[in-house]
Amino acid sequence: MNEDVFNMELRKFLKHVGVTSQREIEQAVRDALAAGKLKGDERLRARMVLTVGGLDLEHEITSDIALK
Image (cartoon, rainbow, N blue to C red):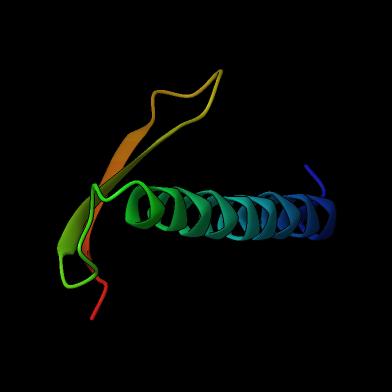
């Protein structure tokens, strides 16, 4: 295994996950606010599950996202 290539590929994947996840969450919150489903002062429970094909890996991350 080439550690440098692996590290760069992993960083690209994580950057893609972070950027697209943020965009999706922001849009979903805006849509919910516009539809009256959220008031804007909630704390939303977020959950992310990471799996990698070919590996016995399942990692779950949970956190609250405050809107105010």
